[in-house]
Image 1 (cartoon, one colour):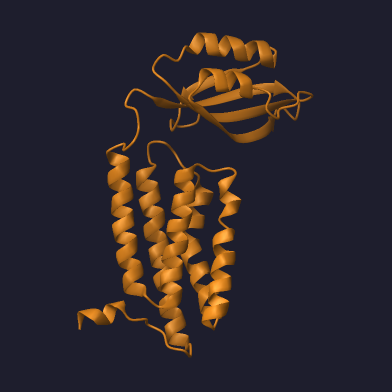
Image 2: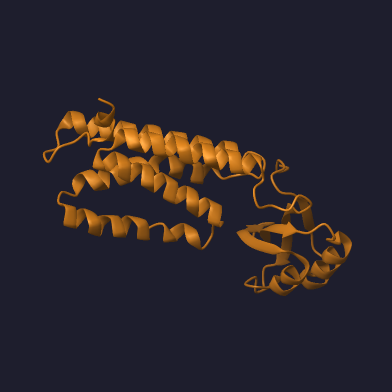
Length: 228
């Protein structure tokens, strides 16, 4: 009796009822994955677009698996699905990429028909993610993340403009956003910095001011509410 939950919920022929069960189950797992991500990143911050992506991705993957029939085609489709994760790799942290794979794996489980295994997998991995985040596993207690916003003139080449200063004064950094301001007369570069306890804010800001022409620079703790 117990082994029945580990058997596939669909046969070789897909019917309407089975399709609905698979899709709504995948949506449920997607919402669970997104809630785990929100809870684990409530202090460091997250983007709404990525949370919505996590919620929808398992259902999308499940539909792809459903529409693919044979085992050979399924293997080829899975290779394509996982290759799509690369779109996040250039702009996201490794943790976000792991959550993307988390959502994809849940969708694959539902798409194949192993809904119970997908739910069990989601609960176990979600609980592990929350516990590791609460324990701050692998982090240095004295380190912290900062949000840096630098204004630069519109005629300045922003690509790698501050990389040497950031490399010298931080443990790691990531350019998260480039946007125009002041009706296009200025650009704003927004970075996420990981700094050590001996980080000298004044010396760091002085180096940046000499590079951006003494325009506005703000340095805040990452995850704090943005001022409007």
